[in-house]
Structures are given as structure tokens and as C-alpha cells.
Image (cartoon, rainbow, N blue to C red; front, side):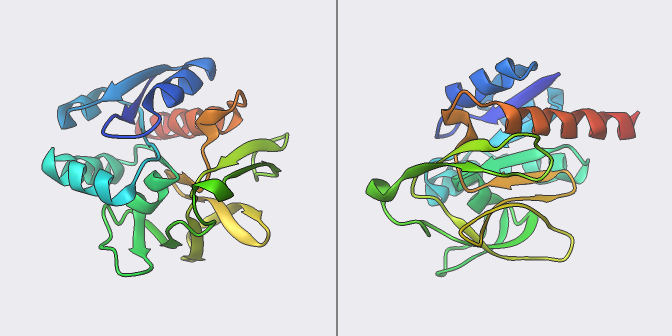
Length: 194
């Protein structure tokens, strides 16, 4: 199973390491045509406005939307979550508009307000170690969106069918359980296609 990590910005190597530790092949994606060979795609953290600009510049917008239309799983972490949202608070133009969520950028404050915590995540047996760095929050979800975890009553992990998002950076710890969960989503999607 090949899982791509959009390699425009962010912790690409760390996501690839997590994918491989979870039992799949991780591939850095630099060209839209590479998506054809993938079972799933991760959009990593970074800066959402920059990622959006680079996706437009290199022709990823329609390719990723088509990938999603085929029911192939996509996982957005931190800025990747913002890029996948239908609506961004504060006037930033939405990017992929794949997931029926509204998000607030940098909701947890600046870099110095970064922190780690253990999170209970629906679908995972053990609490997950989560690293929050200038993290966004999901402020509203559509009825088809399943909230998987909250921190201080704020939504930080959610799923909508084949789409998964987290406010935090699961790739920055040695806990690969959320990547394993994503691989299970890919396996399930491939079983449906066959």
C-alpha cells in the first residue's frame, strides 16, 4: 500500500516515517500525476495560505479533489486540516473545500503556546500523544462529520467518510496509532472499490 505525503511544505519526512512504522510505503508527492499510484494522501502541517498557493501553482487543487471524489482517503494535519475545510474564519479564502467543517487558524495561540497532551480518540484503544503547534480548531461541523476527539471541549480530530483531520501533529511522536487508523481507512476504501 502506497500512502503519499504532499511535499510542498511541512513535516514530510516525519509523516513518511510514521506511515512506514505503521506498515505501509510512504511517498513524497511533488507532482499531481503521482496521486494516481496512491491508496491515500496526507496533507501535512506548515502554513495554510502558503500550502494553498503552492497547490494552486503546481496544479494540485483539481487533482486532489478528483482523488477525493474517487473515495480515496485524505488525512490533513494542522495546516492540512485548514486546507481541507469548507470554511475558514477570519476571511481567508477556503482551499480544497472537501470537508464540511469551519476552522479557526492559530486558535491555540503562537508558537510559544505549543504543548503536548494525551488525547482519547474515538476508534483508538489507547490515549494518543498529541503535539499542538500553533494549532487550528474546528469550530463547527456538518451533520455528516464524526467528532473523534476534543481538548477542553474544543474539536481537534474529526472524520467525514474517507476524510480525516487533526489539529495536532501525530507525526512528531513515536505513537503511530492515528496513522494506523488512516491505513485502516485506506484498506476499507480499497475493499469497497474492488
